[in-house]
Length: 290
Image: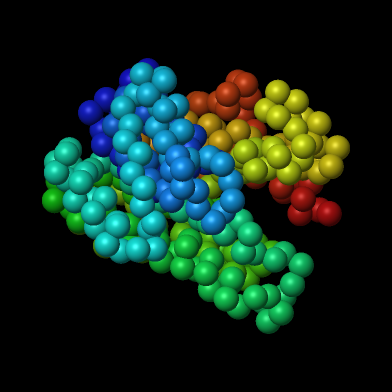
């Protein structure tokens, strides 16, 4: 269903994982999607993976959608400014911003307490995962306030302020939740919605490789980690974003912190295989009791 025809979206950090699936899902639903990231054909980022924003745009176009891959390093303010100037010039408006910039894959050492962890890497996580979101939202919000409408989504990990196993990782992910909450307050008089959204255990490209499986036989990964059996594809959160973006009453949710599994019960969507993975329930029943 083309529920988002006429909507203009920017997916910041749409190279792979949740960002890619969100961009593809929005495009499939009819939105015009600007996909940003640092990895393009012939020039990859320091993450060291092969996925590019060009591939994401091609996936959208193959599904009949409209997409524009725009190389943006969101740590460089001038590049973010140029992005939104282009969106304004070409489209005249912005309806949806998805902040999914991360880039901390190789920077977090889960085995060390914060005082033994690389401080440089820990601070770089904040640069990539908090500052980029702030800069991107700063310029996106200006376009939305002009038209007194819009949706800003902070993609994070978790719905609470609980510690997530590493100080630098926790600070980044909790900050994303609070950014949404704080932006929502400032944007409320202007009719713009801001909220945070988390997936559960995500079967990203990198995670599938980590477990040595493919999407076709992903259940085999549970032999290495039994919690993997409760994982979800990146398209589960993609469908959650489409549901939120298509909800005429989404403003009622502004400032809140939401999950894929929770929203699937509100909006009645499923993962690609027709199931409704519920990481929250699995975590409470299995992980917390370990």
